[in-house]
Length: 202
Image 1: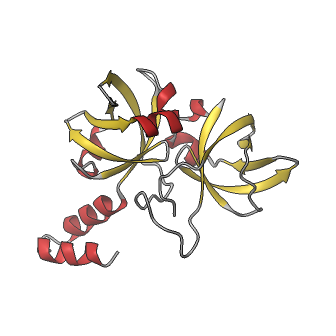
Image 2: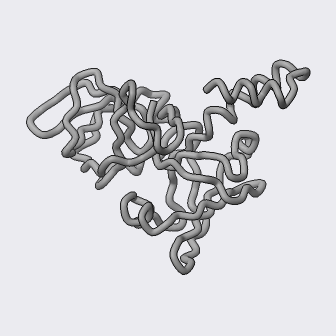
């Protein structure tokens, strides 16, 4: 599990034969889980000041693979007892979105991101979403895109400051939205009070 709070940027040293080699201040151990642009990966090698993670065929097919160059977001997995400051992120990317528009406001920037329509049911106004591993709140949801408002701190401390229109990004929808949808789909008699009770237990 992750929080969606980016701890630092890592530099991509190489990406060859499904092995991604990264350089960062973070020093993992073999077998550790680390989210790279929001994708949960396992550390399989350590060498000097770099570490390697392996991407399966399924992982490569569902993420924005062309973004594995230059700087990437990394976040180590949560440890038992850590404070949860963002939202619960699994590192299981659902799909790839495309940045359709960027509007700068007085002290924030609005990003409009399109997404495959089959994920509309998991994208909730004022709900949580992770974009390239960054925990964010959805402001508006439209049939083919949603709007995020990125504050100045997030804009400068993540890769959002470098994003351009047309760029692809990894999207992980809210875990609870997925669970509730599947529970309601399987049991039409489930009431909203029961849904609230299920949510309260997490």
